Length: 135
Image 1 (cartoon, rainbow, N blue to C red):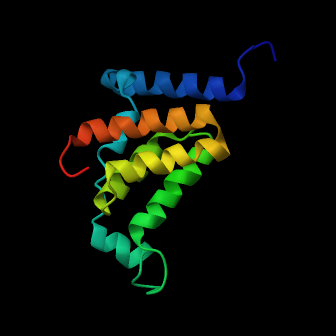
Image 2: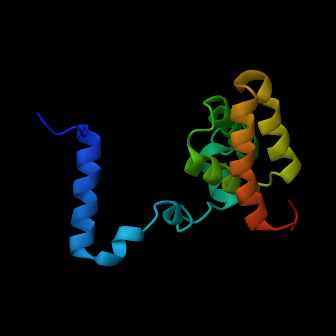
């Protein structure tokens, strides 16, 4: 084994070469753009699957999504796409900007300031894209 690349680097290089050969335009495609193609789930669908429909005395979809946001923050805010999607879904479920900010801010006690700051930066991308209507 004289190749200094690790197997993952070799696989990624091979995939890039293949994409370039099949369609030169794919060379510059960013995976980040794909997450915007996924629609936000309607509040009613979230309530049906994750909210009070299955468990009338349980948590509503908005609360469940805020808890998910807290969990993603506590994991170090490493999953940017998951954070952005969760913020989008929380907004669709009725969460206000202040609730999202407070949820992430509260996690500084448990996850630390760097994780909270990273999560806040990622959430801010979504909040900025949403504008100021009702958030």
